Image (tube, rainbow, N blue to C red; front, side, top):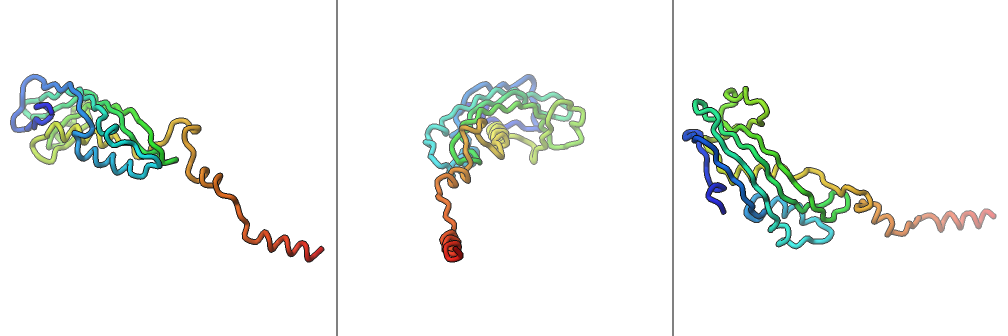
Length: 185
C-alpha cells in the first residue's frame, strides 16, 4: 500500500503545494467496504466467487491541498473509479455496477469557517486530522447504491413471477363446486 494512502493530514500542520495520489488498489485492501459488499452478496441466488470481486481494482486520483493557511482548510479533489458486484433487489441475481465517485471536498473541523467554499462539499472532521485511506473508504461506502436492479427487464424477473410460473394453481373448493353442480343437475 502506498505511503500517501496511509498518510494522515493534520489541520495543525498545513502544507504547501499539493499531495497527489494517482494509483490503483484492490477492494480487498478496504476492510469495511469489503465486509459491506460481502454482506450484500450473501443473499445471491448464485454465488460470485469472492476472489473475483475482492480483486476488483479501485482507481484513485486525488489531489490534497491546503487552500487557506490561516484557517487550515484541506481540499480533496479528483475521482474514484471501480466496479461493485451487487445483488439485484428484484431477482436476487448478481450484477456488476461501474462506480465513479467525483470528489470535491472541503475538510475542516469548524463549519462556520468554510461558508465561502462554493462548489465544494463540506465535511466536518470529528478530530484535527484525516487519514487518506479512511477518507477514500468512506467515499466508496457512500457510493454503494441503496437499491440496485438490472437495467433491462428481460435480464431480470421478479421472484414472485418466477415462483408463480413454477407453481400449479390449485383451488381447494373446485372439487366441491363440481359435485354441487352435478347434484343440482
